[in-house]
Image 1 (cartoon, rainbow, N blue to C red):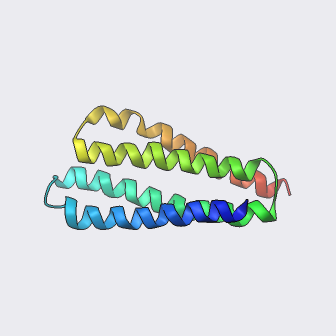
Image 2 (image 1 turned 45 degrees about the vertical axis):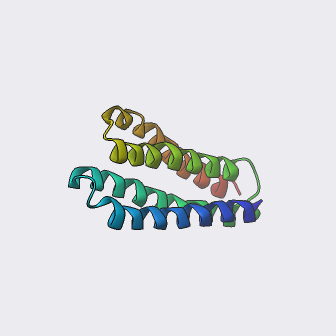
Image 3 (image 1 turned 90 degrees about the horizontal axis):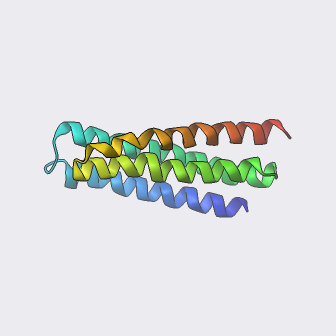
Length: 122
């Protein structure tokens, strides 16, 4: 189980680096500084939580139980909703997408709590 989460984290990190490069080189000339900053926030949180997924991969074999995989799924959901909504907002300029971003933030917070509970229960 741990190697699967570690793989997901590595993929999320690689995609985050690619998106960061896209933002720095391909998007910079196409959107204003405010939208570029929004895109960069999405990349930052994706990369942080890709590292969180690596931690989930490490923890899954060390502390088996339901909390660690829950943390992984919450991190994946957070990346999709938080970072994904920011990417779409920056690329399209559609501001209502910012209204769903906090749901991804809640998933991130819940993921860290689940990871902590999984570690502390063992």
